[in-house]
Image 1 (cartoon, rainbow, N blue to C red):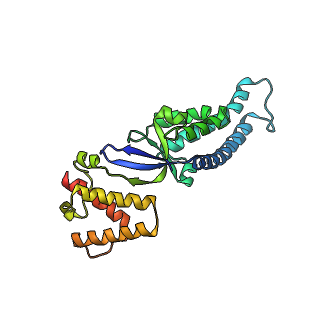
Image 2: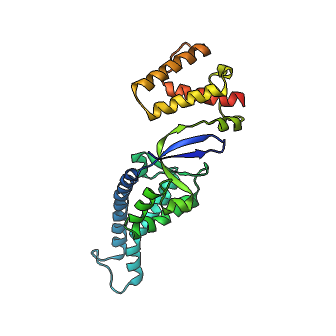
Image 3: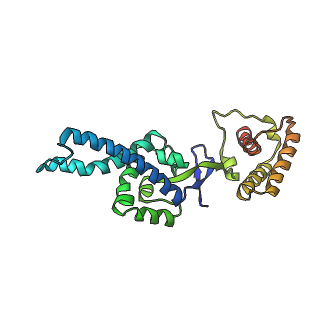
Length: 250
């Protein structure tokens, strides 16, 4: 499992799991089915307007060019508009659970998505998908040429917050965030790093021993924070404590 760390504009490091080649291939297949349906619709409209019984008018080079360029135009336009309007996802990516993100932690722009769409011509069309697959498998961040040009990567939608000591030292506040557990200020940075470590190990080694470690940690923290009601999501509870600590102590 390949992961990537992205530092947001609030200087919080988020660990994302990179999309595997099989995820991207599956999303691509779904997208191509959709594109084929759209192209067929456009073809029927174009044929009805400029063809007689779906036969290409002879000696009409301009119409012939439109006919042959229409699938490529539909392909590029679909990927561009989908990622632009769906926050880095196409319908295929959404179905598989992956999306495009910027490596600098900022929001993707129209130019980023347009560059990615254009490079599909090289990554997938001209090379019959071979170049794109080789780049995804061989690069550290699983990037095809379009990703490299747009400074993007494709990740799985589920992600995990990774708060490091340097993150805690950098963050002063999260303007729109209201801490849920103000008594968390009694703990130390080492306590927070311990919580983070337990959560990370539970994610990596999801077995009964680590689940029990989570349960013991949660019970101990509930006692110290004088919390009576058992949290429904223990992992979310632990991550919330980390975020609260950062906001309240820096």
